[in-house]
Image 1 (cartoon, rainbow, N blue to C red):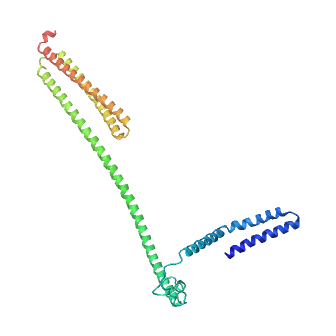
Image 2: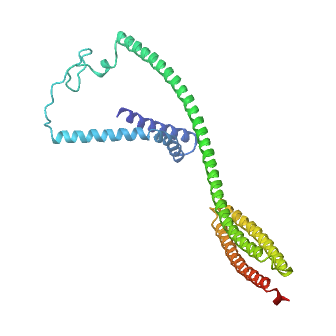
Image 3: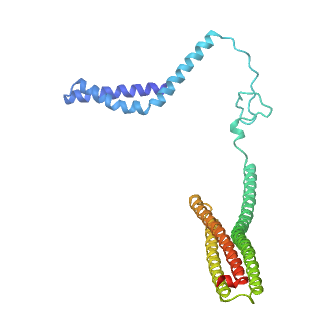
Length: 304
C-alpha cells in the first residue's frame, strides 16, 4: 500500500513541476497538464500489472476483514510447533519440527557426501554412457551389416523369383511347343498313312498302270509337295500364333492389347481350322482322284 501512495505522490509532483515549468515558460496550465499526462502515462502503463495486483490484494484483504467481522468465531487450530533450529513457528504440526529454511540448508558434511555421491553417480553414468555408446556403435554396425545382408537377400530373392518366372515361362512355352508338335505329328502320321495307302494302291496297280497313272502319281506328288508347303506355311503361322501368345503372356497388364492379340489369335485359329477343313476336303478330292486313277488303271481301254 505504501508503494501505491509513493507512485501517486510521484505523479502529483510531476504534474506540479510540469505546470510550474510551463507556466514559467508561458505555455499555460493546459500545456502543463498535457505534458504531465504524457510523462505519467508511460509510468502508469509500465506499473499497470503491479497496480492491478495491489488493487486485487487490497480488495481481498477488505473482503477477508468483512468475512472476519461477519463470522468472528473461527474453529480453534492445533497448537503450532516451533522449529528446533531457529525457533520459527511452523504453520502446521510436524513430527520433526524443522522449517523450510533449515531443511533447505544442509551441513558441510552432507554437502560433501552429496557431492561425492553425485561425482560417483556421474562417473558411473559416464562409464555406463561409454558402455552404452560402445554397445550402440556395435549395434549400429550389426544393424548396417544386417541391412546390407537383408538387401543382398532381397536382391537374391528377386533374382531367384525372376529366374523362376523365366523358367516357368520357358516350361510353359515348351509345353505349348510339345502340344503343337504332337498335334502336327498326329496330322503328319495321318498324312503318312494316307500316302502309304496311296503308295500301296499305286504299287498294286503299277503293273497295269500306264503313263496316265504315272502322270496322276506325279500330280499326287506335286499335290503332296503343295500340302507340305502349306504345312510349312501353317507351321509358320502357328509359330506366329505362338509369338502372339508369348506377347500376350508378357503383356498381361495391358488389357486392351491382350484382348486385341487374343482376338487376332482366335481369328488365326479359325483360319487354321478353315484351312484344316479345306485340306481335309482336298484330301478327300485327292482320294477320289486316286480312286479314279485306279479305275482308269484297271480299265486302260476306256481311257483310250
